[in-house]
Structures are given as structure tokens and as C-alpha cells.
Length: 507
Image (tube, rainbow, N blue to C red):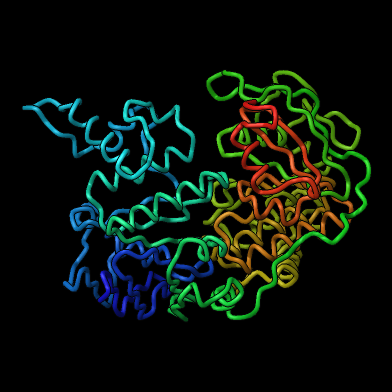
């Protein structure tokens, strides 16, 4: 008998967008059940309904064979449903115990019974092998340990059904292995998990069954042991999907196009965050930059694009210094950027497709002549970009905010490639994208590399780095620990360096 059943769930948003169309989901007690699908397939909406963030227009939920309404997340928690969000919901200045018990603290009269709170969190941590110090400040913890704190929050509230949204997105390979061990221990204890991921190998490693959504409908539920990554990918996108890898031999890399020489920079508090960063990206190569988030990637990106000053060192683009140039001046020199957060930094959701495509070039011919924009020419160019980059939109006048993540990312790529850059910085370019959209992005990066563009790929996805990078540099605590040719490196070795451990020991 199913522990959770969602039957006939339908949800339509204003404008007639059908996010869920008569969706049925059945999850058995004690299983890790994958929920997969393309961006915009309806996974997030379905889980928001289960967790009480959204309400369905039709359909109902059975939990432990009882028909249940979930009006809000607080009700979901009382029912034993918990959710670990992709972006953690923790307060850095508080301790582990304070975060875990927040809102549910044991009391001694009017005061919080801190010793009892700490003791209970420690007991839960030990019982499930989480290895978290309840007295530690969350701000001092690695990303992997912070995720364990999120799981502890659910256990503290006695969650029986855990929803995990892209739980491995920011973890090293070793931390992913630890997470999987923890999840197996949880289901052995009788708990149940719904696992949302785009990574097919994770489904094969940890899940018993997988329900696949496409365009708001269930297109299959497969036993993972009797399936394959290719079959699941085919269900997700509706056709065969081949993975993209670099050519058998790397393209002939040429001269250095982008170079950093002994760059130091401070964080927002004025404390050192980058220390002597030196590397070079050559024409005709993809240099991957690996590292667990929070080791200086964001600050390095801001230094590269001119948003954050370098305290020391030099930046060079095509043999010309750019250290003191503003962001627009760097773009004029041939630097292009696919930003990490396309919604906040790469696009304006309230503006149309054509307005977003010309956001960096509206002041140049042919978009503009003598200070006046040629709207007809701009819209014609936007329609051409929509065709060339296969952007799925009814028209160039549609607001970007209505498009799926994959199509939004294609708009960013179309804009950045429109001026034929010398150097492209791609920061987490496939984060949150399904296998089909990720394949498109990888194809574009490889085509640029083969055309002689220098590509810097900043990614927390080791599979992505290993698939298309010619060389991989590892960033740890604001320093480049090592740079590998792709033939020299494995997931395990990269994970070791990402955790700050070299062959000689701790970095």
C-alpha cells in the first residue's frame, strides 16, 4: 500500500499556464522515490502543493491511506512532511542547535531549555550518523554540513516524509556519498524520501523508482533497477538524448587570451577572500574552475567582470591590461558573461525577449543609429536569434519571466554570443536545467572553443567539468590549489582537492 498518493492533481496559473495536469504520484513507505522532468515540467509545483505552499485546483492527497488537506507548510510539518530546499533556510549567526530547534525550542518556564535542546540535537545527530556539533555556528560550517543541519531540522520535527530538492547541487563527490549514506539510514529507519534531481547517475545510485513528468503530465513511473539513464532521459524529453563530450583530442589551444596574475581581493566585509590567484585561459580551450561554493568563486567572477576591485595583481585580456576598466569597457574589449543566477543577474523577467537580447548592444549599430534605436531591425534580429538558438517562445514580444529555465538560458547565450566574444565566462551555465537544455549549452560552449574563443567554465557540477573541460583548476579558500589536464584527473581526485586536501596533505 502506498504511503503517499497524489491523485488527479491539477494546477493552472493565471494566463492559462497548466503546471500540473491530472498528475498521479504514488510513493511507498521506506523508499527513495525520484521525481524528474524537464524545466517547466511541473515538479516544483507538485511539491509546493504537497508542502502546502500552493493549493491544487483539482485532485486530492492521501497520506497513510487518509485523505488529507495541506493548507500551509506549518500543517505539512505537523503531518510529518518536511522539505530541504535547494537554497538552505539557515541563519548563519545562530548555532546548529538554535537553527534546528527554531520555533520548537524546549522550555523551562518562559526560558529556552538550552541544555535539553542541545542534548536532543546531539542525540539525533549521533543516531543518524550526521556528525554535526550542535554548538557550532552555522557560519563556520561547510556547505555539506549545512545540508545535514537542514536534515536535522526535519528529524527534530519528526518528519516521516522528506522532500529533497536538488540536494547535491553544491556538494563535493565525497559529500554526495555521505548524503546518500545518510538517506539510506533514514529509510532503513522507516522514513520515506522524494528526491528531485537532474542528475541521472544519482537516480540510478539512490532511488528505487522514478516518476517522470513532461509538460505537466506523468509520462512514466519506472523501476530504476530495470531501467537506464538513457531511458529516463528519453522519457523526460520525449526523444533520445546523447551526452556531449569534448572531441577525442582537444582543440589546438593557442595564445593566452585571459590572464590573472597574483590577484588578491577582499570580500564585502573587507577581509581577504582571493589570495594570489594566477591562471590563464587560452584561445581554443575550456578551462574548468572547480570548487565548493563559498571558496571565492563569486568574488573571482566579480573581479573578472569589473564589479569588484582587485586589491593587488593584474588582469590581462588579449595582451592588454584591463585591471582598471569598468564592466562595459571590458565587454567592448571582447569579454562576455553567462552569469550564475540568470534570473537576478542575466535577465529582466518583466521585459520582452527582444529587449533582453539587445540589452548589451542597444547603443551599437545595427540596433541603434545616431542615438536612435531601430526597433524594426532589433525585433528582426531577435526573431533570427530565436530561430538559431531554438528558443521556445510564441513571439519575441513575450515577457522572459513566462519562459522555462532552459529557454531563458538560451536567451542569455544568444545575447552573449551575438558580438562574437574573445573570452566567455560561463558561471554555473546548466544549473537547474534538464538534460536536453544542458546538452544545448554544452554544444554551444564546445562550438565556441572550436572557433578559438577562450572559455572559463565555473561550475560546481563535476560531471559537467569532466565532460567538456580541456583543463580543470581547483579553487579552495581563495587560492588555486592545482590545475589538471583532463587526462590526469578523476572525480575522486577533484573532490579531494575541492575539500582542501592535496597529495601532500591539507592545503
